[in-house]
Image 1 (spheres, helix red, strand yellow):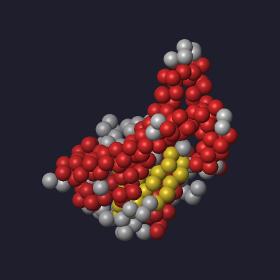
Image 2 (tube, rainbow, N blue to C red):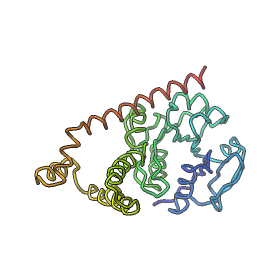
Image 3 (cartoon, rainbow, N blue to C red):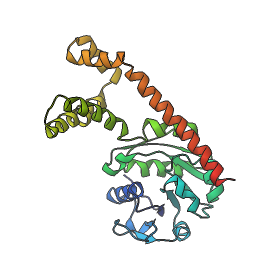
Image 4 (cartoon, helix red, strand yellow):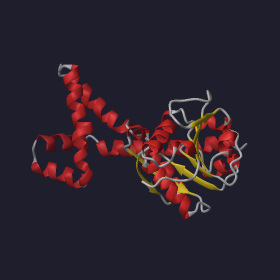
Length: 268
């Protein structure tokens, strides 16, 4: 991976996501430690070699690229002038319009990574304003690829949708694992055995999907008419797909409402 010569600052650098990207950029040599500045409320953190500060404007002044990695409800406390900078936000529910008004920047990117960034297995969709150059876009793609995979998506509405689809991270497999564990516990099996068995399915066997079309795999298993087919068909008949669709619709609606609420709070 090519090393960038641009200076990068991460506001919220001691948070789990900001720290994950900072460490990944250093580990992959995407950036030299001398080019990386991180801010936090304490002015320190666990990323060795990077510069730390409590002053967000100082971070902006010494950076070419500013990554906003704070909780959406904390964004109102981040007062910066980032005109002329490339600003990347990983906050859910804060629109590009709101970002522009509160940072002064016109080269803006919204992205939606997930918790798997901490293990280098994150998928990050992102979108950019028209002012973002091809060189900027290449940097953004490279930055997010330090923690996994990334794709530019056509519109900001797609980012709101991906808040639920991929931004939920481990939430969906955790729900499946929890349901499987509770069913096995009702059979009186030892808890340690249950955990190993269920996680082998959710985190192990699921890797078979990497090179396989999920729908084709499921249909092949159903056509085999064995125990897996019986389980899948029962779940389908009980409305499994509808439940998943309802969950994604709810997440999309929540992301839209968060954006509206953020705009009302930050742009009175």
